[in-house]
Image (tube, rainbow, N blue to C red; front, side, top):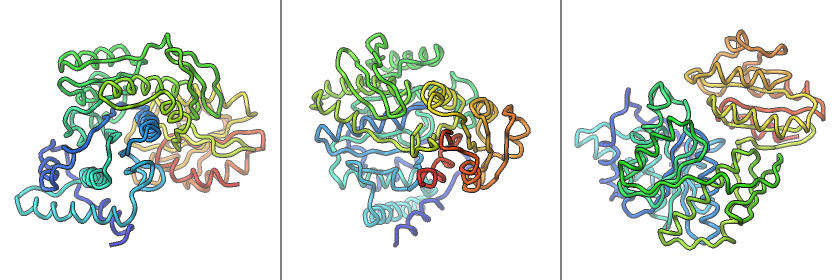
Length: 426
């Protein structure tokens, strides 16, 4: 089996009409020897900031000398980004070997009267097998959707639980209200656990997260924002002090400094669990963090940036970063925007249109893409254009941009992944 054949098999996995709980994944993992039982985890859930938080923690743990697995969802450009060990994506031979084990277990499941694993269950099982085979000492585990019902929540109480910013997204799966979503995200807080909660939350969400921690007898930590001092902030990243210690982070935007102090409090929790994490390793880990596709500067003259934020809160965070960091460096901003139709796209479109001097609406490379012509009919940007093909939209933006302008691709992780490499090219 080749790499492409393996990935095609994974993508063609059975998709149920609705969530069916954890029975199937637990049965599958049982047939595979319960690999999750022999691993230690940091479990991360939230609406925005999961990926950045996971990237920082992964980098810190590696700098401290720990063999570190990382599981993320979704990927930006290559499927293998989802499963890494010490920053190295799973190799073809290992991917195929782990998939074949899952296929054997799937056949047994069906003989035993169960439905086969879904795509996400298959990927998660492959990842767990890989982490065990590679001898991972800690796994930074990012939840997929939600928390309580998410497949990743089959793990036992982790070394640390992290709840990032919680806002409205995935309403079809998680519920229409912020309270519904917060309750589901809070479901990863386990009895007797240790949870770090991102400090800038809507009051309703914060109350629910803290309440769940209290119910579960878990120790909750919230970063002290009075201890954070940002000393430098630019398109190249941030410098800041927290609790009197200095750090640098090559991820731009004030929100990343807030993500970073959430990570630093998680480091304190992990120290309490016996992990040796000296200041020098933590500082190097933050300084060496790389996370593609999140307000990422990929080229100059014109300044070219890409962002994978795909909900209202993420787009508002992007807008703040644009106004603070990008606008002072450019004359005009050309925004290429595409989004998924099953998202709450109207407020995101309004934010994109409000940022843009020229707005180019396009399709994402997914059948669920929002129709750009429909979006154009609601755009408030006076210079709104439609180009359904993403790469042609980028070519149009390049033809319109002077060296003093900026080009920003945003609205969807899928669009960011499709255009990132070409946007970076001269």
